[in-house]
Image (tube, rainbow, N blue to C red):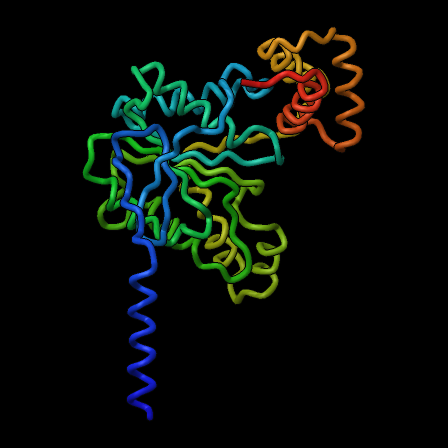
Length: 287
């Protein structure tokens, strides 16, 4: 009976394997501007249209734009460049600036697709980073590996994998790769987790150092904060002018104040959501 059961299970498994579609092949790493890394199957999926805005439309973060743009330009030209951590308030434009800077540099250098590819890796796939680097290490193209909303909690040991990659390990970080990450946390760890280490560890200073040292692996720290009212107005007016909404400035500002009060904050994301609301009311498409 046991042998019959095993044979039946084996036949069912074989049938399911035949029914399952084959995994799609990994994309050509020279053909697209951007890719998403899939840890399952260790493959790159090309992104046909990147969700981004023009760099000139990002207001109130001029210093951050200039710093990241220059770092990315140097990297694209094969010069030394730093990994970058963009940290701070939600909706302040951290991920938008990464995508916009990438597009700007590629346009300057004859793209798209351009000499620099943007590869997004999800936070939960960080342990597969070594496999991704192996995939792109020995190519002529340059790669920005980008992780949005990166943070670590509890006993999560994935930060050790990332630390090893940023340090380069025995092979060293590939010269054609930089790592850009965004986070709401400056040290990528919640404050209560750091404080807990101080209170429970045998050697508190060493325990805390282990937790917060990951952020030290980023040569660039770019802070993002909530916008003041003038900056918030500048964001909205830039969008309105670019998309030709045709709403008088005073009316736009009055409604923007009301909108920001209902949202409880002023940020690039809130400004964009307000512009979507106005455009929708006017029946205008934002193409």
